[in-house]
Length: 232
Image (cartoon, rainbow, N blue to C red; front, side):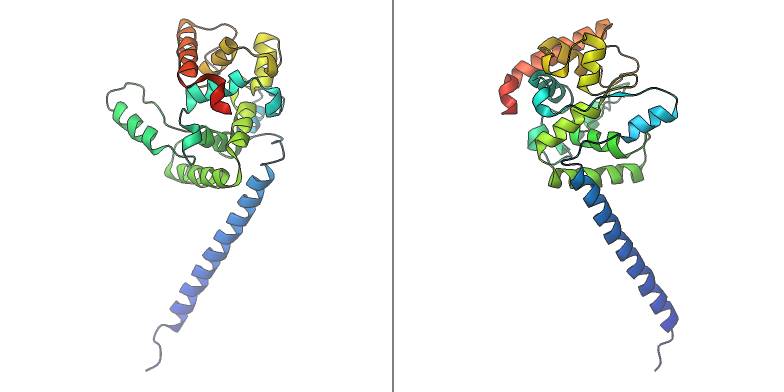
């Protein structure tokens, strides 16, 4: 008996073949981009481009890890992602804890890792959606496979917004403390980490009572983590 649906079968196979080739192409392109950025300093980021399109100036000064104070690296780990060296980009334990805490919190807290924040700042757009989250998780896992943890931390310290239009610890150190990132002390580094959740509203050079309290909390966590020996 002849096939009653030869055209439909051919069409279905053609669609599947096209989708498969498209997925492979996207994986190759994104893989090459992420791999190149393992060694090449990002010339800009999605968040910087958004600032420029909004008419806001951008201060971004790439600085290699060996010219960044270890206090700055430890401060962002203590503030943003204390399990940074133990997860593969997505911290399931932190997600579960945040989900539990947010049942009773007026302002929900997030559970994004430093790796996820690098991906968000580099490649993505503001907002919340399942599509955006899916892309974020894909890039995060890809980056964790292709980059060492030290590179992820180095890029984060360079592209995180620490004031309106101020990206990275070098620009922030010069702007707010009149010194390079290499010379940031423990308190200054913790202050920059304290404003990360809302750098346009909270000011490192004119800290509010909340920022001051948060700064000392971060310093306590830096000591609890073992100090800069954690980075070795």
